[in-house]
Length: 338
Length: 158
Image 1 (cartoon, rainbow over the protein chains, first blue to last red):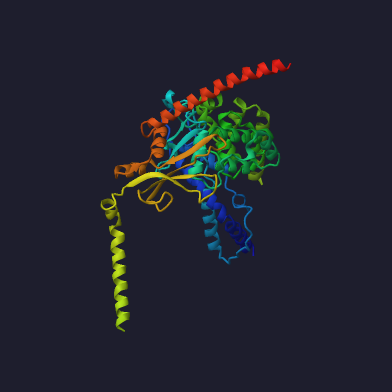
Image 2 (cartoon, rainbow over the protein chains, first blue to last red; image 1 turned 90 degrees about the horizontal axis):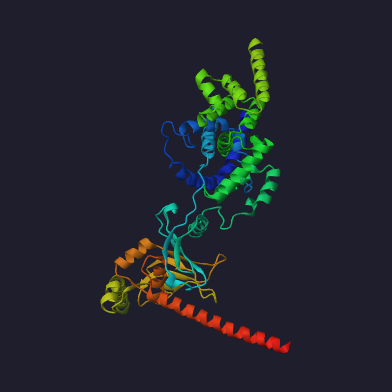
């Protein structure tokens, strides 16, 4: 009966996820393209977001809660389907669902802010005053990637310049519309409205909307992501993003800003010791010249020792981390004793 | 019986004739009518009053302006949008192909291509700009002479 129940639950949620996957697929297509651009790092250089080791740690910390990934999303009402399965078939279904969840948890790219374009192609003073409006010329050839498309603007005073990033995004959306993207960004992305949405705990929705609307690397994308991460850090609501595709980005941002204490404390509170250790090792990877990293390499520490070194050297909330570690060790001792 | 058979024969003959004619039409167009392919603007608004929108199109010369075209190569919106831009899209790859095939260009299309930087500037664009500047200057001097006159009147009234 229990098996039936879980099978029904799984298939209900899986069935309802089908339409959303179409939108997610377009997201994945967009993200997969830029994802493959970065190549692996050379030895000794600063580890980037796309390195295999970094990605490995981030996927591990993100976790894989099937119930959360496939939770019911607002969709067209359809009657649920029920399937009768043997235990083997149920295991296969769970495996399939895990693979689908992994695909859905693929992390969106983290790129540095793109530099503004200001290239003037020609200055024709003889054309000054030719018209009151600008002319924007876009190359509509289908087979060029959007980044390499020629979009030029002829100003009324005669200068021919390349279009700015905002103009480019808008015009590419006009001629090659993407599902879910709007020409004018949603009112949600203004500061005041973001605050309201954060108070309603809808950080994940904001980040999903941001991913669809803006290009990764645009100023708005980075601004919205930073605002969301700051708010989560301030209120300690890390669990909202756990088991979603945005958790990796959150962890990367905090590690780069050296403010991992809150996250480690949250993990220890939820008894996720392995995750905390992976996070500290990631921190050491990204900041190899910090005191705790050097201590750790000199002592060849692993496991809870890493956490102890980190709490002594680096963290501001060392008291809490040490207490939590003690509690964990006591529990482990009790467990082994009994 | 005979008439029916004759009718059927005529029908087949006309069908074969039409078939041949369709395939020979482009060649006939070239030699007989001296037709050629043009890249020009075709109005695309479906007769919406006061809202023009042009398609940049490769069509046979003798076809009507908004009629059947060979290929659409872009669009042009002559009314500026909220950002004060007139949007023009060009499929440069296909335009290069058609120019390579010997297509002619009309004046508006040549002007637009000149403005975009794909072609050198059309001389009429320069002339139009000069004319507009002259007009603007005239309007300024006219406004200039009017203002002192108005001020004199106001002073007289007061």
